[in-house]
Amino acid sequence: MKLESFDDVTEAIAKKGRPFHLLLGNGFSMAYDPGIFSYNALHGFVEDLDDDLLSKLFEIVDTKDFEVVLQQLQNFGALADLFSSDRDLKGRVDSAAVKLKQSLVDAIGALHPEHVFTIPQEKSNTCARFLESFLKTGGSIFTTNYDLLLYWVLMRNEVVQSVDGFGRDRDDPDAYVSEDELEYSELRWGKHKDKQCIFYVHGALPLFDTGTEIVKEEYADRTYLLDRIKARIAKDEYPVFVTAGNGQEKLAHIRHNRYLDHAYEVLSLINGSIVTFGFNFGASDSHIVEAINRAAKHGRKQPPKLWSIYVGVYSEEDRAHIESIADQFRCKVHIFDAKTTPVWGPIDAAPAV
Image (tube, rainbow, N blue to C red):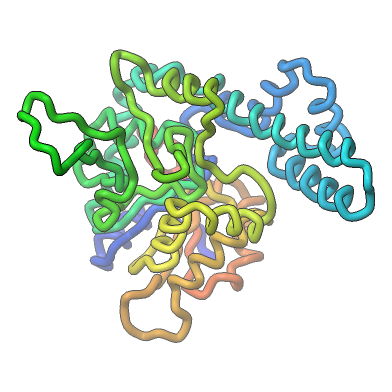
């Protein structure tokens, strides 16, 4: 399979005249700063918590991946529930899972840049142009990342094409109130979902489920977004995101949240082509492959349907992996060298071979 460059991808975008969507994975954040946005860094943060139980769990399972450890805990909890009458054992297992999830929330928060203005303006501008190149085709942006980078870039650069589906409603809309006394709700999802083109498929730190609404936290009252998120967490309010399990377990989590379910359904219905950056289609991503294949509508000759996917790879190992699973996709598969993609800055290096 030919290894293309990102210039080849942009040429295809210009030539085909169809919507081109973008799917971002953890590599998007790692390309900004691999020392912060990696699971190894998150694991190091958990070790620094001086929690013997969590450290031993990582040693026993022999991994630095939160998702693998959480899946093992969930499996053991199910077995303990089936084979043991010891309620204390089941409680300890469940408690450990909850504690690990909380550690993940703490880690993501603590390892972020302090606020949006920590990101150099040049990098932010470059990333905004990269994102806009897809939105201008009529495409959407999907991300499986939980962090704030995408949200920060869109907000700081006021990318006008980007609509995340959130908006405000008037409090007491039926009551007459003078213009200067009008009060509005916090940002709620749904008001603009028909125009939505930014989708957090696995949720994100700023998104919270109140039980009746999906709301988005924001910078306000001169308080940075990350600080406002931490304040919610301190009140036992937790962000909406999918952290653990295999593809089908992730899909089950998605289906039980109306925002996540909507994002997944839109991904399953896209028309045109999709480009992936920093997404490796690992063993726990079967639900994403399933969504892409639903969009491909195998055998259909007319749009709307997904015609092709362009997968960014960083290494020969990544390339071999995508080539080995290419037959799992029901649309045409291209691969391109992710290192030639100007996501955060100009590219000087030649394509890898």
